Length: 498
Image (cartoon, rainbow, N blue to C red):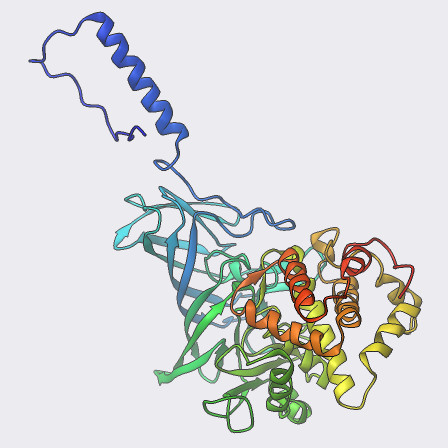
């Protein structure tokens, strides 16, 4: 292969005279070389501005894989009526190039970029919508590990999703709550904001007293100076940016446990609760170790090094979210909601979808965890819940019962529908049909094996169906899963037989 020159040297004055025919041959060779440089790719290559997600095609960026985010943030609450809160940040994004790069993109919506550097050298940059395009001073080789530092500031935005819910930077009564599913994390730090690119995190946040700052992972340090407190949070296990969170407010903190496995004296539990929700949430949050221990028996070892919860006021946030290590709740949760969000630590946070089309792998599994909890704790069996859904008797209103069959769980029709009932309830029904086909023991082994096989990774629906087929062949060779995929996972409408 012809290597591409960065420049073509001029002819020396003392060079011998070259015949015209030879000059023509040289010109043709140079032309072919330049065409090769243009079409052959490594020189002048740019990472794509988007990963082609089925529902959010511009989300994420190609050409690199992030391994670590180092975020240093300073938060200022609003200074008066009508003023926005302010955030100043330095993001150090460490990544490995998956191709040679002359330029690459980061996702960042809003905020003012002050400077960008790659390594120790200043880089050129430009903005267009959510895309921050970075052109380093020197090209980056395929396989090279590189560090990008972005300094930025401003008032982060709140995003309204296609389904009408609010995410991103959510002002609360006494601070702010940052939630990122599916796209909101790009409002408060630059990065590769697609679930397929997971990384470790260090998030250091300075806030004025008496506010507290809570994030994912473990609290490494807390220090006060001049009326401000700095909190340093560390997440060692890979985390998708949509389950990264930052909660700032006057929380009551409860911290227990210490190393080892789950249990009252084992896995560290860090809970942050809005004072208005403290008393009413105390009992159910006290059951976190119990739920983790129960889930470990069914799903395998807990995949992270701490657990807990963040509880805010229901008027400040309208939904629960499985933010890694400590899920967020809109007011005091009941036990089933707690089970659901903690089950996501296995299914969604550890085993993370490759694209947003694969949401049922999160929600169907967490919903089925609710069914299993009820079955194991004197409530309805999973079969009874399945039968009620199929008969249209589960919900009090006919519209909600009919909505279960609006579309196949593996094929939401649009971005606005990825959190609709079929993804949750019919997704759980898919799992129950697998259970019927392979038997209880094999099914529970499948749940555990899937979480173990894909621990801290990504998977899509095809990965799961292939895994289930292989597992069934080993443990229940007479089982036929073809109707499960055809009628329940991908089939349109209500299957003719339960």
